[in-house]
Length: 93
Image (tube, rainbow, N blue to C red; front, side):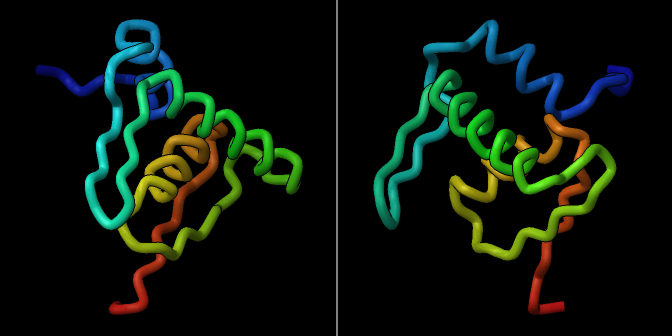
């Protein structure tokens, strides 16, 4: 299939309309967490507002240094929704 001419943020919003109440994320360890698409959207929107309040603007870079966890994914979706550049920081490099 051809590449999609869209962003992660746009795809997330498109899929939200389709899967709103369905399970989006299911983490078993270390602490259980289940989020529906709508719940994930609410967390993404909350972080997006916070980033805007901090003064981030489209094209700005946001460094993220954390292990693989739900908050990393929320940050990835929030930054992509705002047109920010997500810079994953890995201290092993």
